[in-house]
Image 1 (cartoon, rainbow, N blue to C red):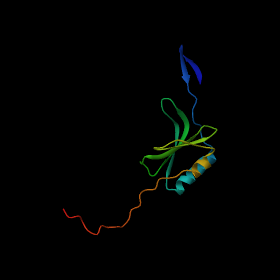
Image 2: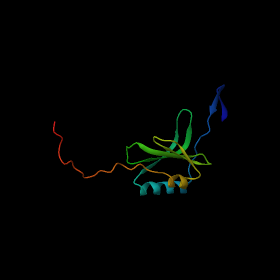
Image 3: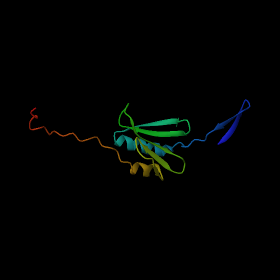
Image 4: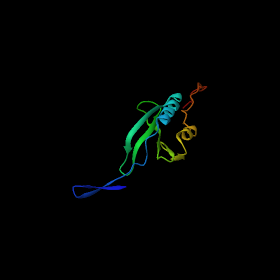
Length: 119
C-alpha cells in the first residue's frame, strides 16, 4: 500500500488484488465460453470496499442470468469463485478452465402419470 498526501490528509491507496489477463488468456476463455454456450464478460475495475481487481472474467448462462462464476488472477495464480461455492486456486487459466464443472440443468422427461390420485 502507498500513502498519498491530499490537502494535508493521508490517503491510503490499495493495490489491486487481481491483475489483467494476457490477451491470449482472454481469447482462450472466450472460446471456452462460446463452446459451452456461456456469455463471458470482462469486468474492469471490479471490486468492493476492501478488495479491488483490475479485471475479472464473469461467466453467465445467458444475458440477464445470474453469474455462474468469476475468474481473476493475481499474477502468480488464477482463482475461480463459483456462485455460490468455494474459491479454487489454479496455476494458470487453462488449468482453471479444465477443472471447472458446470451445473447441468435437470433433465426433463416425457414420463406421464398413469392416472390422477382420487380424493
